Image (tube, rainbow, N blue to C red):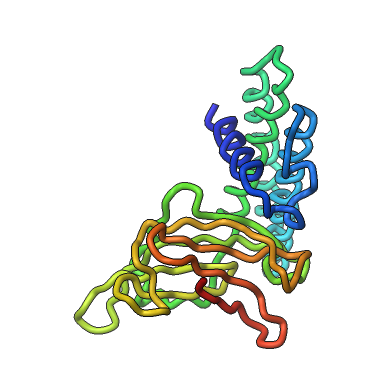
Length: 238
């Protein structure tokens, strides 16, 4: 049931936004029929599966022969477990027309979690990063750099202690890259509050890849997008 609930949240988030065209298949915008709901959910699962394959190949590339075999065996065992678990979720809704959504939601959730578990972020300042505090629904995967690679973007809070003073900052991580902002005050480069939400929006500069919107629910939102000229993520505040 937990996977089905995640599909419902995803369905609502997509169908309630009029500006998702270009990010999702057209069918994800309206989802007027059960068939369209299944097609949309399947599209998200394929995105997750593509990400997992990408992460797996990257992990395998740097391992010696024994380690590659262990990783391969572990992955095969995990796939069998995932498929059996998701078939069980499907069976729980036996007889209904939306039964496939039980299984697809399960496959998507478990595949994304497996990709995150296999990922090993590098390049973060571990000596100042105490703990990344995230709330549910603060992670999104997508082709954010327009390079065909799926990345995990997530927003959260991190406690920083550069000297003897500890303060909290907002931190956005996209793959192995990160950006941080202060919270509080009336500065243009700071969030007003810490109740941050993350969503994907169309990028007018690059229609084929999504941009990100970060909203604290109090001030204007921050918008993130990939800048090819600067070879970096840039942000604006509206």
